[in-house]
Amino acid sequence: MRALLVTSVGVTCVAALTLPLAAPASSAPVLSAASARPPSLTTEPGTDTTDTSGTTAPDTTTTSDTTAPDGAEPRAAKSAAAPAGSTQSLPLAPLAVPSNRVAGAPAVQGLPQRDARPFSLVGVVWDDAEAELHGTVQVRTRATGTTRWSDWQDVETHNADHAADLGSAEREGRTVRGATAPLWVGDSDGVEVRVRPESPAAPESQDRAATPVPLPEGMRLELVDPGEDPAPEPARGAPANRAAVPAVFADTPPTAALPEVLTAEIAAASAVNAEVAELGASVIPALTQAETAESVNLAPGAKPYIGPRPRIVTRKGWGADEKLRERNFGYTKSVKAAFVHHSATGNNYTCKQAPSVLRSIYRYHVKSSGWRDFGYNFAVDKCGNIYEGRAGGVTKAVLGAHTLGFNTNTMGIAVLGSYGSTNPPAAAVTAVSKLTAWKLGLFGANPKGKVTLVSGGSNKYKKGVKVKMNVISGHRDGFATECPGARLYKKLGTARTSSAKLQGR
Image (tube, rainbow, N blue to C red):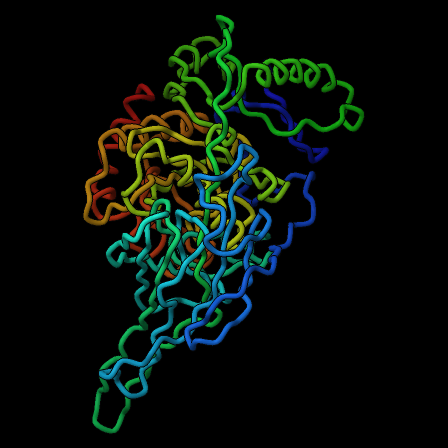
């Protein structure tokens, strides 16, 4: 199937495996014309919640299901028609003043131990997306249906380094909030949280008082229930050429709105869509390097430098609720580099739970943080499974919200877990190599090469500054952050070498 490139009429056509190797040089983000008004972040009144002063205050809960009293309907009792996840949003308040508190220091905020409806992921958000949280966030949780409380766990404060670029439509056109990294805690129904501000800096002289560091205003604890895993698809016999069938498509516009020359191609593509729908598109199957090269319609004898397409679990496969995200897609012109991240959600998940982790992060990004969609373009779990992230097509240059200042013409890959002091599994590093060999190859990028990117503004590079980076970089290369963790960052050299080798370089 030939590539369908429709830009003049502002529509998204079917082109799952038919991108050109190189794209136009322009770096301006592009939104598809199928855009609808961004959905508002709706809130529904929940049950009354006891605040830290002992009085009862209303609890505003962002959720997709019917509000039930806290502790009601334990997860084990959910019916087959259970909703696709929900979010409880609880306001933080000053905690009791400790006897040794320094005079003038900001108060510790949080929530004392309390019951909650079942959840599996936590995070803290606040009103101003550009305000930084200077302090530490810790939570402890109770396993659902038990009296067992976890130890205190640290939540990475994050501070806006994973986000849409300043001035972008996603940043300016929505109610975006500041947020910590989300933390996966497993099936829980009780929570306690404390946010300690940084201690005031020591005064330089006796007559100069230390300045307290205030916490951001409007802090709320977000408790995310990922909902149930999607039902397994019935086994079906696949045709012999199934591997070559494209498995991810954008919505096809009405053919009447298109030039006549394209209507036949779209009709043919629709037939492929029907076949894929019949087979199910939970997984995009892997291709050999020869099949991958054939899929991009190279000229005879051309050297592709494209790694074999790896197996990719689609959004349908991990159970993404497509009603959560904004309808339209955002694109840039190319994929010149890949930024590797860790999700900072902790390592206490099994690979079987990875889809639940992804659904939780997705809901946290959209409902809690106010983003248009899942922030990363792809995710990789500890077993080396690769997942489609932000919607718009796995072969396309989808504009993400992963590296503040450098989202244009790049892609973001999140390795699920925290890798500051823990070594990333070899399977995860290998998956990063396979994914980048294929996706960067579609756009003619050399994984071992360098690329010059223009900063959109970050705490490391001012807007407009040209920065020379590795084609496969870590998040910290574009922003002053610990991400992707020291241990994962040390493995990027291995990933570059392996990725280039897979491309045939």
